[in-house]
Length: 185
Length: 357
Image (cartoon, rainbow over all chains, first blue to last red; front, top):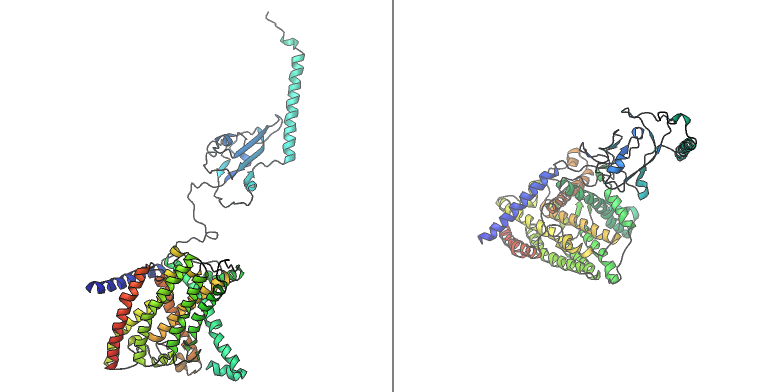
């Protein structure tokens, strides 16, 4: 019989304890972050979408080789000796036309391994993480600033230069230089 | 009062009765249901340190309207093996049961749907309608979860009607009336005339009654909570056990009717508790209309107090829902048959003796 009243008492008492706790929580500020309008602060070493500062890229292909999933594809064409490609912001001289610089973010695993080998620090992680797409092909980002016409032109230039050089070599080989005849013998 | 007004206006008792019967639906129950849905989400969210709906309108205030539009657009799915006529009838019946209860509830001294002398009796009887509707829904769905939910619900509602009625009888013994309007008018004046504080009488019996009234209030609040299938007594629709209980198979507007009926039921039992123990529409501290000499303002104030009391008890129901875990079926029956009913009987006998004094 005593147990019966004890049960009633403990039921009522514990209900009131629980209600007190939930009532207190009514006035506790919510922990929710209203995501698209309020964004959480990300840590300093966050790793999100890559960006390539194409002005500084020398086309060395180091990032492509470091990539464990092979999501970076680079194609380069050598510049003519007469052409001046300018310098990077760190003073390195550019010697290659980067005709193709594609990063496939569908493949990218955000490991940041491509960032460290870059000699000019032109590839780096940004804080952009909202870049979902409906088409997988839209996730292939092309960072090359050359237009297709320009690319064709550079390729043709280099091919012509190569051909000229080869022709020169061939001409040289065909007509032996008389100056270079053995003297000392 | 409103009936007379419309009768004079249209000179037709049919139109007047029609308007009288539709008024609470469109000016009270629907706005209340929309508000309560939003409020429940906000209360639950803040009790869990969340924010709840925030996008539609101020703090998500228009969210229930968006939800209603969504429900309107939904396809009305009827599974092929259901008992179609019962399946379609069930949500209507459940809603009719919960809405009919409002016919006898006095919203203010100027508006009571029907001033029945058997008001409380009618209310208890008509709330049994919901049982038939729920059982119909569960049976016609031809789904084991629905049937289990319906069976549980029926067992629960029928069991918990007993303590409810026993407590109602104690009130009826003291006041000697079943008319909810008279019951409210008895408790006029200030809050110490409410039944929870021993009723309008004076002398020693009033003070002796108070602890038993508090006990009675506790019992009727718990048992009505169980009658409307709210947590901690929500085993008929226990989502972790029975998908959604008896309304698993319903979609679109039929589901919305169950939903509306649930919220209307919450208000109906809250209003019943408010009328029985907390003076119904009576103000706890006098009327502003009396002070300012504006006679027409008093019913408006009464509507305010009725709404405030009803919504307060609805809030407590929500509060309990987000505090307590669900009872097991045997615990549910234990609570009713071993605790509430004996206590209600003891309460009934003691109050009977006190009123004889």
